[in-house]
Image (tube, rainbow, N blue to C red; front, side):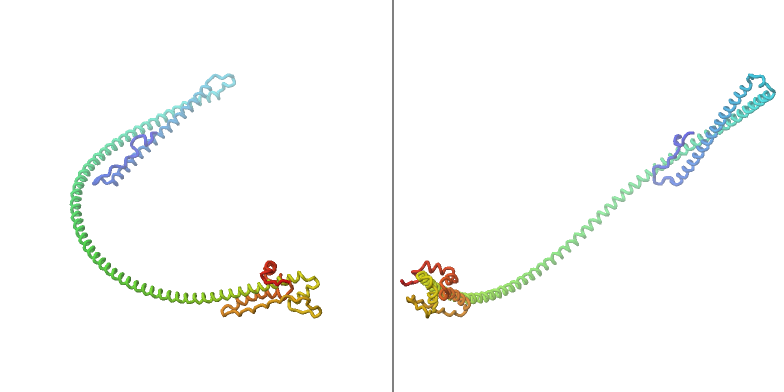
Length: 382
């Protein structure tokens, strides 16, 4: 069986060059579908006939095989028997019947095979003739369609050429009209832009003048306000400077008075310390000169106490009295009093207490001052 694609006819061509004012594509496709259906039916009939021929050929071959088997069986039966008991009447009748049956089957198979072969050959011949006839018709129709297609193409090309010329002329007219409209629009646009530019320039000039006047007015107002604030700030600064100068003068005067008072207190304290050093030096000399048992009575005399039981054998030196401390001036009473108290406490401790306690409880430099300056304190010779 020949495949459908090997005959060069199927599938039919369905795509053609489209042309304007050609044939109706739907009708052409319907006709091609009809032709393709007929070809499919012819091919199906041919394939069925070929299949039938193949079936009959197989049956013929099968029948021939059976005939050959029966012939071989008959030949075996026709051989002379090897034993005498095999040659009976029944066997002879069987052999005769078998030969007759084999001849009958062979004749029937040959007749059937010849009949089927003839019918198959006839059907195949008819199908081949019909196939060639349809192919010729299809070729004629294809040539007709091709001729019609070429004619339609020629007409379409001529029509397209005519339409192209008309379109070019129409395009030229439209281009000229568009150019004329474009120039008119450009002139109108330029005039409008010029008018708007003039109006905008005038408006901008007016706005600039107004802005300049407003800016000058604001600058004048700002300058006046700044001048007023500067004058107010200058007056306020001058007032504060005067107040600060007055306060500074007052504080300077008070500080000067305090410094003078402190200098007086320091001088008084220095004098008190000198007197205390002198008293301590005398006390140390007296303690060194006297025996150990007379230390306490001498010390009691130094502090101003008298012992009635033991009279003083030798009059001691007269102790100078401490000068009264001056009263503090107004404004710094607490500082002057504190300084004076420190100086008098050092000297008083050195005078009223014992010699050892006075040297330890006074200022840190009293004992050393009494030892290092015995002559400067005005010690009398014993």
